[in-house]
Image 1 (cartoon, helix red, strand yellow):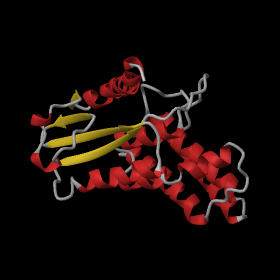
Image 2 (cartoon, helix red, strand yellow; image 1 turned 45 degrees about the horizontal axis):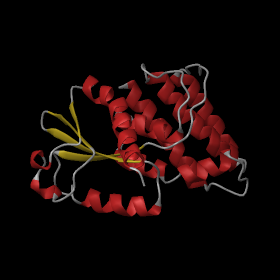
Image 3 (cartoon, helix red, strand yellow; image 1 turned 180 degrees about the horizontal axis):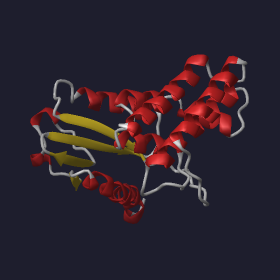
Length: 220
C-alpha cells in the first residue's frame, strides 16, 4: 500500500475534526487535535483520543470512527470504562459515516407542529403501522435539529450526523445517544427497502422519547 493511501484515513479524520471544531470553540472550549500523551491524565494509560476539548474543569476526549460495527463497539466499551470514576472527563464518540447528503433546503418546523406530528406517530404505532411510525419518528428528530441549529438549518443530514449534533449541543443525554445509535441499522434497513424489518413498540417509543427530550432541551 502506498504512503498516500495509508495517510488518507488520517487526513479524512483531521478534516472531519476541523469541521466540528467550531461547535466546541463557540461553546468556549479549547480544541486540540491529536493531543500529546504528556498532556493527558495517567488513568488513560496508552489510550490517546483523536481530539480533546477543554473548558474550565471539564475535559472531553473525542474518538472518531468511520462507521459502527460490533468490533468498533467492543473497542469503545473498553475505552469508556477508562473514564469510570473520573467525573471531570467525558468520552464522546463521533461517527464520520459515508452517506452523501442530499441538496435542497428543508423548511424549519415549529416545536408545536413537531409535537402534533408526534401524536400522529403514536396513532400509527397503535394501529399496527409501526414501520411508518418508526420512520416518521426519525424524521421528527431531524426536524428538531433543523428548528434549533443555526449554522446548518435547512440542510439534510445523514442520520448519524443528526444524533451526533443533538448530543454535541446538549439536546440529548449520552445514554439517549447510545440508544439511538443502536437503532440506526433498523432505520436504514427500513428506509432503504427492507420491508421485513419490523420495529417493536419500544423501539418506536425510544425515538419518540429522544424527540421529546430534544424539544424540552430546546425550550430551556
